[in-house]
Image 1 (cartoon, rainbow, N blue to C red):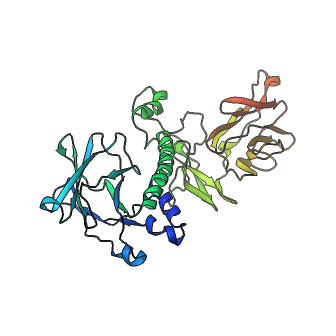
Image 2: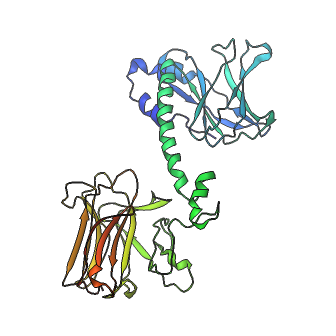
Length: 385
């Protein structure tokens, strides 16, 4: 199988070099094939003819490995090189893979003593604790053909490693990628270690629950998760326009909305709010840095409705939040200069509190990350249909 080994940052930097520096930045991706035993990877025959034809000079190769998957601690790799100058025609070097090595991490394969222009990498052997271990699918090998390539590799791999580390930090927030202590944390609210709940909990008074982690082409398009509970009438949705359904989310995947993108749920009396009833609409939101103002969730009927908006709502900050509710005669609006971050999700809720025994305490409130940031009296507000 042929794989491109150059990390994204290395490829990007090497392509920008001027002609005098290009020979030193040249790379050659080697082809690894299954060996005669599972612990071996054979290197397909290669040469540096293309480099010599292009630059009219022989390279000064060194060899690096990149991991394709998590490598067990204690793994060792033996690299066997061939050269007529070696006693018996071959020589080998062994490296111990650093603990915690995972996808994208790189290490150097040292050349044997006495290596020269005819030296070629022949195969790799993988072991752990002196016992052979399967090597297929674990590695990519690249020959760095000059000093500049080695410098770019050090810089580029470090940059890509930081990118991978960022992604790994995010992964434990998702049920299917959490491991160890992170998995236990996800299950804490059930008191059952290693048995995480759904990303957002269900209770009997929930009208509809959308995780927005649906795959394109699935049926229904946008699932109401209450459908999984007996006796529930689900309110599934449809997506239209610029909606990315596999965007990285608060727990797993989320819906990302571009201009004009919408998720629509059919009208139902189940969403009506009686004149004495309380109601909460809540969501996890991560505004795009370029957002001006956008409606996150809304329900509008014949002169009544409610909405939550995020963005520049006139409070002087780009990540402000506003919640509006109206019954046809009275409109209530609360807003807060919450300045929601663009690099992580925030929990936003609009809460209508009504108590028939204490109507003066009725309120329409805005809650961000569990803190009430704005509220106004809801006395006199009627039904929302």
